[in-house]
Amino acid sequence: MNAPAGPVILFDDDLHMYVLKDVAHAEAYWELPEEFTCGFDAHARPLRMTGEPHRVALKLTGAAPAEAEPRRLVADHYRRFLTQEVPPQAAGLAEFVASLPLDES
Image (tube, rainbow, N blue to C red; front, side, top):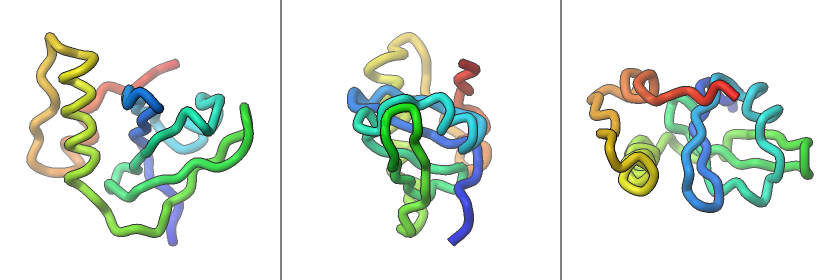
């Protein structure tokens, strides 16, 4: 199994979306593993988070890419949190991921 490809798309326990440029940035940014609900790498491969507070690690779950799931969760995020914006509609996965707003924190 390969390493996750960035950017990574993570969802917290409120299903708020975070798009972080790569795994290293995501692992440094994320504080509490219990706040992680789900995530995907740039190829829509599901991620899991392990570790302890301020020392998390992201790994591929080994499951097949699930392109429909991140698209559904992104659309839900826009409906709930970005009500004045339209979610990305790109047909191709690479274009879809590239159109997501990166968190620069």
